[in-house]
Length: 510
Image (cartoon, rainbow, N blue to C red):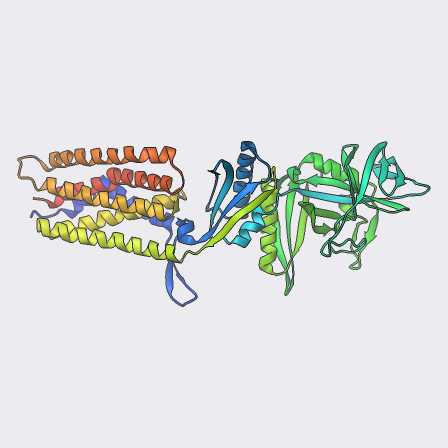
């Protein structure tokens, strides 16, 4: 055995590259020891773990309206909504079951309750302001943007506003749907009607009596919201005990700000019990035709066409409930309304217990396999100096694969673990090829021997990648994850770890 010149070995560009990539991978993986509830420490990483390892929820949903366009729009909006909510480890795809289209959702680290909060609502959002009109001798005047429009009261079922007919019907409210005029509690409209358009403002009847008609004017809808604020300056949770409130600011389109100005220009003032000065009418927020909040309007906003920023707030039963409601509202406003109501056909929580056990046992199995193969290589070649490079390059390959997954935020699931195990196995096989080639008695230089060995290794790698491409292009779900992980691992091996092992062999072999 010749003496190893470590100074020259560690100056090799491939080793320098490997050490640099190992440091970068550890930075991306970011392993941090964390004490659990049982008092034991576990390693928390930046790796994105899939549904089968992290646990989560799986659901099958179906739009009530049919059509491929409806399915695709629902899929895109749900994906955007879940992302906006902050549950990014997900799969949202269209599947066909016996000729019927469904959307399958898989969300890691979530519950059925989270899922239903996000997707059970169609997402039709409207902000409405009440405009009362006094009726004298069956007539009155509605004021918008400083202009007066004639209103005629025909009977309890018909109203004429600016020459447009509105058919009024009484809403049958349940015990949970109350209407208390003048109170702060949330309320459903006691009456409803068809909508009409006056000077660009959409109106409908909210309540009606012999001496007063209350119109609802729509200040803005969900599609008018450009963005929602999620930082500490623009959103917050406040309260104590059982009284919690969320609030966050939104930015709306200029056109909706102009509509808001027209509606509020002629609204008078009121002074609350706390002494604050607000407009007489509040702005009521509706989600899927259900009231979610009723907010005071500052007098400083009256008639302001440039007021494109406003604040949305609502109650919560606890701090966690208020945060969940705020995130749900933000997600709906960011993603928009679904083109069709949807039905949750089935849903289930998935426990991460077995997945975590499989992850730990898989990593342990990989390390034990590396150690076992190293022993076999030692028994075969009777060279103790070979074992350390085998273990070092194999473990390095494992770290680089995890580092690459963390960098591109690729989800590690059971399929990815299977792919990693396959790659490590092929890497050890390549090390045996390199070691065996280096022991041949032929009168060839070590570089020529390594070159011959790499012809075999590159051919095997190309074959593996070629076999994975059909799975990558035509398959989906877990099979596609297996293919991507295998290809990435093979590329890392043939470009980095296996050349490093061959370079080390040049230094340690006679």
